Image (cartoon, rainbow, N blue to C red; front, side, top):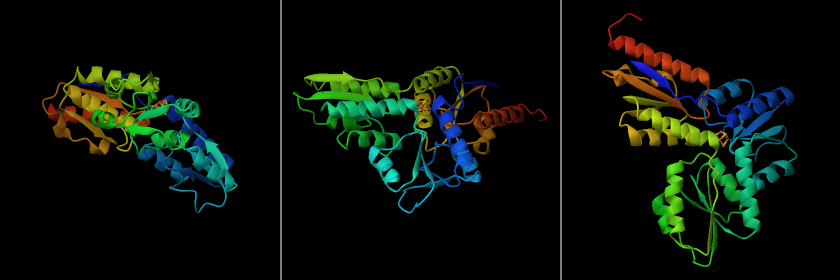
Length: 288
Ligand code: F3S
């Protein structure tokens, strides 16, 4: 059985940067808190916890130390609250997310009606809504976009979460364009890394008998890769690590594709690939 790995896999630039900042802040400060998980990968976050990082949901009870803003960013209100408490802010927001945040602030100042395509409960989208002072609308499906009431005289700007699926974004943009507002501005805010991973996962899923996506179940970009793969191939699964791999999945398969989310470390992908290869040996009856 052949195992083909997507060329773009392992950490993206923004995730690698966030982890490096987190590690160096743990060396520099006695107490470091992370407002939510630094990245959406349990194993990596557990490693940082062992180095002393403490993940919190709110800064309410914290009285001293440094607070990490995660790679997904935070709203200006949250950052202001941390500073008002006299705590140090360490910002690991991915520069691609920061760029979208600045865009949202600018368009809100110019009084455009903002529509963000993304998941309402995702930290990045919450931060973007915060940068619009709570004024932006969020839609995440064609149904929601159709239901959105927009007046013909309105000036609308549409942008997306950095890890949104490109095809879903295009679908939703078409629906909004159809509303024929006086002005509709479309921004391409999906990051390059996301687009490359989605294209490679789609190509790979079209070539293999089975597809494995490696990454956190709470990772938006990992789940997008699974959705995209499932459109091409019925046999597509998401695993967080090698322990979840079942030999039966590969019985009779000639090829397996492996792609990963942007917050999945190389060492987990390599262990998953090794386990898949072991399963292939089991099925051909050779000794491991
Ligand atoms: Fe940044 Fe894109 Fe990674 S937004 S965190 S480079 S997936």
